[in-house]
Length: 129
Length: 459
Image (cartoon, chains in turn purple, brown):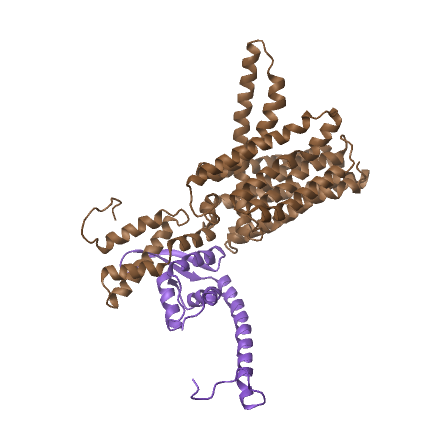
């Protein structure tokens, strides 16, 4: 299963900010972390990460600095700023609202099976799948 | 990595392939050199990871390039974020950067320039008396020229006729109906105010076309600010050259015993000026890289000079103390000066690389804004005095209103600039404030045009 493109796009900012809140990082490592966190089910077009990082930089949510990779190549590192943490907290509250709402409605969809009228979308009985 | 093209017949090694990919990416003007470094680091990271999982060089490279995404899409995304890098190449609107469409663009711009020149000239050929004609031109000059400019943008942004008309016809038609229905005498103060403010108000309607209808986007608004600055620069250059040429031509004919000045003044100058509006706009879009290098230089030259001028002016006012009876002319001059300061601030903002950390120039600009604020407060106080003593007049209301509008803008700009210089705020906050404020400027110009004349009974 792959996560829908729009959903990936919507979660990109909080995800990147949260990963940077774990510690300074760079583009390639950020995407590997996304892969790890989603067990490979959220895929990004890798190149698209950089415009996003630059936007966060412009908004003052992250700072960037050039360093060197172990191989000696130039590498740009990103770190989250206090403003970025604030933005992350705000996004987090919003996501919690969304996920709580979804959680509730899914619970209600699931429960009528043992009550009255579980006709529409009750969970399929075991074995039917 | 050498820039020379490898000409080996056999399979190219990984470094060679990456170098080739790099050159390909470098061609995109939306992607800066540092960004290419960053992308290359990423690509190499991908290749290393894929090779570790057992792929060969070639396979790993192919998969990695694919994972990076279609270059068109990535470059478009970069363009969206770094609009300042290539705002004039219109990557967001048209994908082919400079092809045959560039030439067609010039053709369309020239045709529109000729039409604008004719539109400005034709009314004066009607059998009307001088007074009526003067009144007509005070009301309508911008209405005769701006629509062609808006039309050109609508065309070059691919807005389409229906959408373009829906977007642009209301402001222009409304303005045309209103100002021509207002019964102001051609020597009334309100008519002069309309003549000054209508072009400004409608300039924002042109902006609507410029941003291709995306007026909610703050990036596109900043593009329009940048465009306006560059356009003024080109127009000034054309005016200087044109003025010299007209003078020389006239003098040449005079030396031969013929008086060419009437023809020059009645035909060449008005038609040329109207046409120059479009040609300058085309130049900004097509030859951007020329002025792009001048813009930061110009702001760096004029910011200190303007700051100095404001300081001298402030000291003079404090020492001489003109008080309540400050000449009306002086007040209007100060208004013009403050508009200039705001223009300079906006232009400098638009020409600045947003990612740079605060520097000496930002502090200088803060000084400029603070100086302008001081002058503004001084003028407001003295104008309030004038109104209290002599009662309101259209000119005073227009001047004091403009002062308030500028005061609010400069006060907040100074606060944000201070925060930015101290490293507490992002540069984006400054940009954002100015782009958010543009509608206020437009609204004030519209209020002066629409509300003041009836409010002062066409005085």
